[in-house]
Amino acid sequence: MHDINDGDETGINWPGYRTDESMVPAQIKPGERRKVSAACVTDSGRVGAIVDSREAVVMHGELFGIVMALVHGRWTKRIDIRIYSDYLNGLRTIN
Image (cartoon, rainbow, N blue to C red):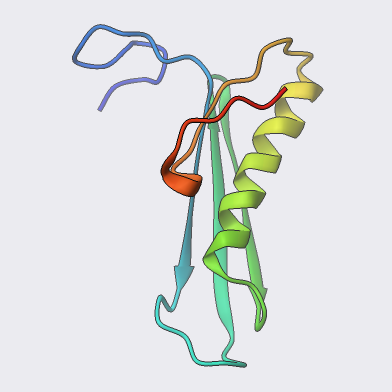
């Protein structure tokens, strides 16, 4: 496993934030209690959260991770915030 600032096996350095989510149990029934986790890995550490609810779904965890990255970027006064996420499986630039 590489540190996020060491680059990967291609030698490319990927600075920025990484987000991901999970939900337990993965298969749910309406009204069933579940735990949705959100994670944001930064170049200076990690931030995480768990939502314990009957209404939350895995997409809430993904969006929460992205929001945590944006808040952390503003809090640390970053001018350019790059977030790596599998949300919507696409590449997007947000101004």
